[in-house]
Image (cartoon, rainbow, N blue to C red):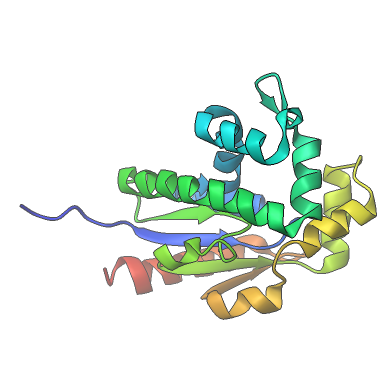
Length: 205
């Protein structure tokens, strides 16, 4: 029996506020499917009974408001306590990894993309063929995050940024890089990477 064809699997990562979602939308316009790992992780808090049970055991019943996750309380735990953050990541990331594995198997495009802020920190990059890093200057990132989250203080924003790897740690793991600063031309960068992926990974597979 002929083995099933394995789709080429790419990852997109980068810090908060760099414009990963915008980059992914451009890839989707090229008919490249995107798996949003962060959205899938958020959904698991409310759809997975085992996750719900473990979170209540770890953080108490207040972590849920009825059947909904208490997002501000969860964020305060995650971004102020590295030990709690690690335990939650250990709970969530393997489940998201299994979901993405199944998702990739279902795709028919030349390649697929997994978008995740913690793609490198979680070790999920090891299952992918190459990683694309999206970067942006810090002042621009802070401005974008404040626009998107007007209720956050600058201290809260900085705390969330500091909880993630910085680009100097990410770069050694990344085959491609996209620079986004609002005025940079994103589409030419993305098209160049798209054609390179098709040539170096898809046509060679």
